[in-house]
Amino acid sequence: MSKEDLVNALQSMKGISGTGKVLAEFADRVAGLVATMEPGDFISSELPATSTAPIGYDLWYLWASANMMTNYYPVKIDGDHYDYTPYITANLAFLGNIKPLRVYRDLSKQLTPNVYFDVYSMTIKNDWISGGIYWINTMAFELCNPDISPQYPSIGSNGYKAKANDYVGYISIPIGQIGVQEIISLMQETKLSGYKFTAVDSLSGYYTKAAVVLSEGDKSVVQTPPDMFPTITKEFNQCYGRHLIENAYYIPTTPAMGQNTDSPASETVRTASDDVELSSTEIIDYGEDVKPKLWMRYWIHKESTLPVPGEFIGILCKPVTTPPHVWWYQETTPFLYAGNWVETKTLTSGVIVSVILEKDRNGEIGNAYNVKVHGCEVQIVSTDFFLYSVGDRVAIIKTDKVEAAKATKSYRWLDQVPIRETDSFIKKGTILTNCVISPLTYFKKI
Image 1 (tube, rainbow, N blue to C red):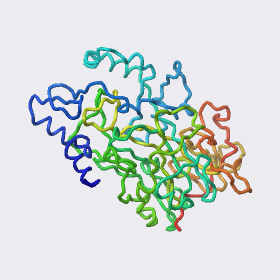
Image 2 (cartoon, rainbow, N blue to C red):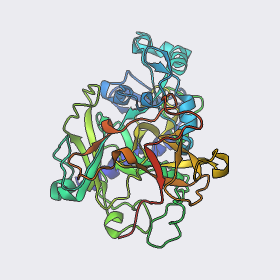
Image 3 (cartoon, one colour):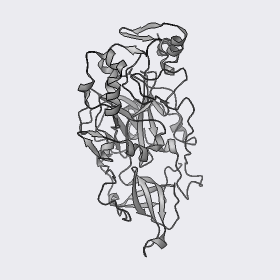
Image 4 (cartoon, rainbow, N blue to C red):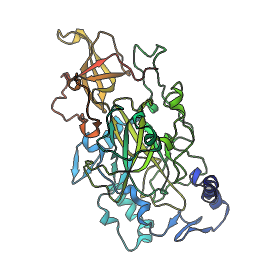
């Protein structure tokens, strides 16, 4: 059987390509249905989709590591429990209705010999909803010049193995057994929200990005109230983003549209099979041991317009819904599994939220700007006298990182300094002196 035949067989039997739409139609039409999907799994039209106790690999995404938000919003409730809702609302609004993964840290309370009773009496549900914590696994990354090797080398993707010097870094996440997530995809903040770099966007030599308009098929499905199992829907839910895994098992081999519709041809014809390394070498400095998970890398081609320095990059997961998959009260499908703010050694960017005119600065020269960088509001001055406006995404030079000497090492997520509102240097009316707005843009056409 060819790979295409196998994919078609999986789709027809389980509806994997359409969020269980075949199964949903089947369950609706057969009264009193009790259907066995795989040994130990069954669905009933009389009760919510049910399953025997899930096996370990079904739940790998609930084994959380290194919450990225602790670097930016360290407001502790108790132990490692935090309420990240304010941070998500204020700084990740571009996600729309996509919610991060929700995990439960005290798993011992979720272990009971009477699972059926607890599920349907809502005991476990109430504990999970009240004690579950939003979690975004930290996405590791390295960015480097083509002639600099990564500090965490790996065999690489197919494209990297063919031409390593055509790649300028990677992003990497801990991942478990394939077959659990129907789709794993890559999303960009600037792809969702769009961006405008003032004073250069009107020039034909530069790329621009309008905010994407999501089709109905790309929108997330919200589950209210959260249930033990993901929603089975007849509507086709494709999952927004650049797909790294599709049909639960396969790395796409079809060309994907580039980050901009007028990107160079080499970007518009890139495929996930060129750039995805499903199992890379271990990242020893991650901060936590992710075993038994492995590492998946997405290698960044030199002609890619990803990332825009300073933007948020995230990994979305859409769990397989058939056979009935226990996902422990997640809120949306897909959900945000991992992510990070990604910038270079000397460059980042931010969105202007307010302008302090020169006449209001007590004799200081030039305007100052309150800019959200890493989602945190800081005050920065500009290199020029151009009037930037609220809503503009502006390029920012990290002046303390600019060096005449040529870079000899990659820039890692560990080298990136988180900006937090609790930092002592962030005070109302205090200029952040190691950063300056500059009339640059990303990216210029070649």
